[in-house]
Length: 237
Image 1 (tube, one colour):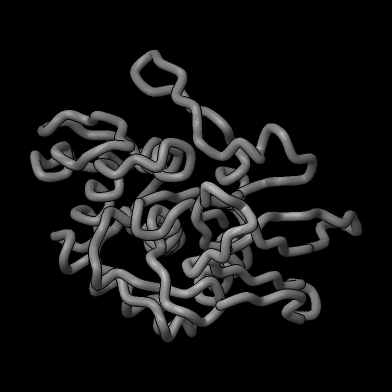
Image 2: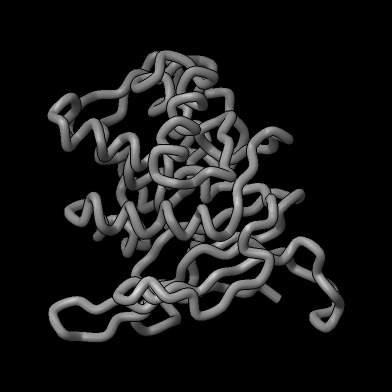
């Protein structure tokens, strides 16, 4: 079974439930002990941890990684270094990344807003590298930038090596650190938070749909990110 952590927040006096920060794996037998399960439940208003299971144990973040890629992209938008319509160049290296991807073509460009949608909704690994190269010059340098920012935010047990969460033994985090990142995305860049509730976007005349089924099936769910690699199992923020 896939398990999720829940954060309760309040907007304009209305209670809203948002799923937040868990790392889990699908098991053939739900009753079987899961050594890779980790979760945390936090009440944003009080800061109280309502539930924690292996919350500080090392796990692979999978595509929850893209939340940090987005955090650094939002930072550039906030500072005026980029605009939503700024074009991002696609390199052959970015275009070569494996799926899930948007299948962007080397030598082409895509606007920042499309990159945001592709990262959140499609979880596009190729687009994550496009952003990494635009902001950091290279994937490796951007990984260092991501890690530096993580530590600044108090995510002391997180190390990033790539912008998309593709398998890398050195890219690790904890459920607690992912909760910290999720909360900071909501609090630091509320103007961009509505992107996380979208279930589709348009690209080159096509409607691209997402992986987060909770957005359409669970009343009140408004984000944030899904992920999966074999080493981690299914992840949800």
